[in-house]
Image (cartoon, rainbow over the protein chains, first blue to last red):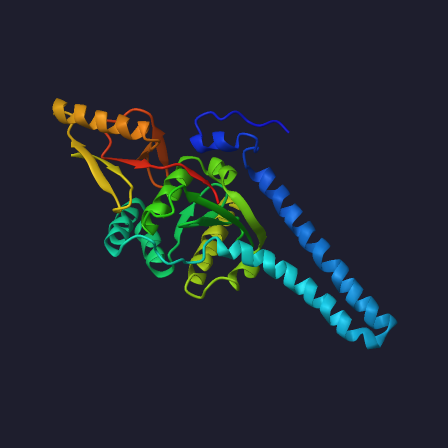
Length: 223
Length: 74
């Protein structure tokens, strides 16, 4: 698979020059792989659990263990995805946090500013879908609002105040959305509901707003 | 009045302010901008709603130029 030329995209792409530039087709491909992987983890355990009980009803406890595996493994994957936007205690001082959030507020609109104040995430609409950007990662809700991609991505200075860390990511995303998704590491791709229930309640309104924005993008694309 | 700021541990720091008709201020801003590039920062300007652009030279007509650090996958 040929790597596309860097052109005028994010300069950070040079650090991951071997990665193909993320686009619609590659996102769909990743989604298929994640669904296939989940299925490959779940189906054998469910089948084994059912077969054990069918052959020997006394093996029901072992069957339950197999079913537990079928449930736990996808949960662990979803947990890994949700972690990228889980709130973490700020490392910077209160004044630096306040100043950084003020600058971030200048960069984003009123709606995104209010959502950030409630949830700690910033909503950005892009060509690939609706993004929810946090200090150390981002969620991409695809048009239609049913599938989420969780990306682990951050500025290379963990001691920056949270507003600045988000602003770094927002500016990079606005510069080159596909390059941003290429630089970031994909932690999870799957159904929105799987991520939603792993998020803290305070963050869920951001995912709901992202899903709503993604549905609007879908309607606009099909209009 | 245009501003050059750097996102840093204080939240942000204003590195330079200038107007196009003030050559001394422009010169100081250009020098400050280049010094940040040498430190590994990238210059960013907003180019409309939801859009930004990386700049390699200080755009004198921009209201706000922000210096950011590189990002990477976590």
